[in-house]
Image (cartoon, rainbow, N blue to C red; front, top):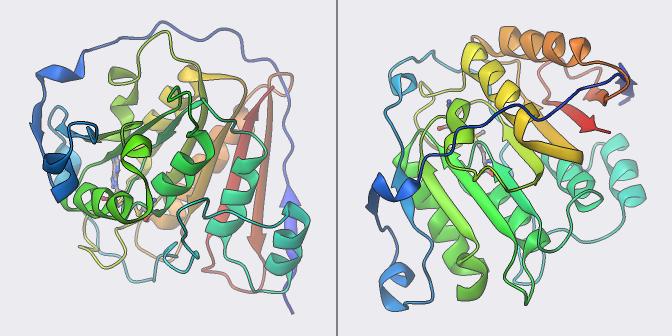
Length: 285
Ligand SMILES: C[S@@+](CC[C@H](N)C(=O)[O-])C[C@H]1O[C@@H](n2cnc3c(N)ncnc32)[C@H](O)[C@@H]1O
């Protein structure tokens, strides 16, 4: 039997959005990865190599299967359909994955025209889900996506190719960089509604290239600074690989310390599957 534990509600005041550094991304080495990047001037999604990342080499070997979002049913309109109630019940019955629950929660926070960050693009399922939430005719929405692996962003770009329109793709900017530097690519005047982390390694990729607790905490600090009130930091984290449990504990520590007046922090996980992914939501009041 599956049971769901929901815990740790912390509220407190988080004061101001701290000073942020804005570095223009044009200086980065840009490269295109999929046909639509060449075929239409309108399809301007680009991938920029941003700074250097020592994490490319800082690896540990992962032994547990990361939960891939690849079973999400994809369509051109929105990969997220149905109600929150429905998805929670399905999750409790073991028929929905943590990543799918996360997508439904996003739907309750993100609005058309919002700016959001995908801090770990991987194969692009989260990026696509976010894009469908922010995209509309006004072309105001933005998805800032990043990953330390170029191959992950190529995969993301190719998924967008298949399931997003050229106009929608224009709203996505992809960067080969560590999420700890996210403040460098999100302009100072942009209010970010959601920062999504899906930690661990690239499903189907090199399991030695993995998120690491020190950088994850730095990225969470950065996310905390750029997030607008009413925004959400969404984290899917895995404990089955070396370093995974430590990363989860650091995230818990980080979340538990957030002042209760300014933040509501909760965790959702399956109790009798000890290696099941953990869902953590940090809501900024
Ligand atoms: C579980 S996958 C993400 C899955 C993805 N969101 C999707 O929908 O397919 C984790 C990703 O994090 C990336 N990653 C590892 N360290 C990172 C870092 N410091 N900054 C950004 N991405 C990182 C990995 O390369 C990998 O592609």
